[in-house]
Length: 244
Image (cartoon, rainbow, N blue to C red; front, top):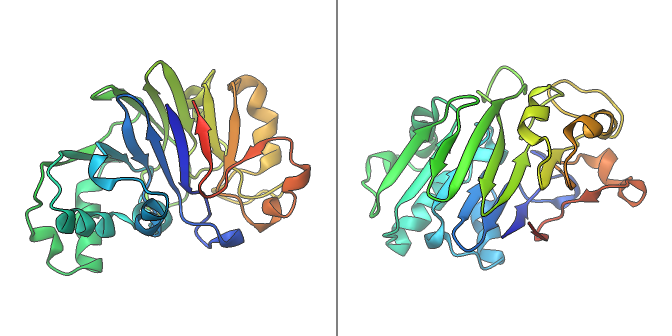
């Protein structure tokens, strides 16, 4: 199994990086974590077959994590997709997706897809099985709009992958990522505290209690990107492939 960072940038495209979208694939698993606005061209750039995806997990409803879905749905129509698809995320995802589709492509939400589409609202801390993939969402803190906000603990093919989503520090991240094979965590700032995001230094103080086997930084702002040469952790880049 592997993770490909289809996009790993922040909302402002710091460093010219694309919006958040991770592709997880293996013998039985084939899904996306988040689908930011730039996801469709990035998926095409890396030759990832959209029609083979079984699941898309959404952490929250900001455009850099959620805004690519209308383009993906339109693409599926032109591909005449037949494979069923699950889109899962925080409560309210069905209404949010309908509103987003209508904002981007009027009347598109009323068009019946050529495949079975299931839009699933997940409950905090309740594990949910999607084929061979088990997903447990954990509530995190990322402001007053665009939520609810989730981090994910994902089990598939004998591996545990955790993703912080966008959040300031919360002990929920310990529950989500403890002993994970890979913890993908945002590090928006280096040591500066900003509301609703984690700094690299804050993350480092908590890594001993999280105890992941590996950590990869994502969603980095300019101040972290400018210091990457001195950062003692692996950092994501668009297109990076990491075995799990």
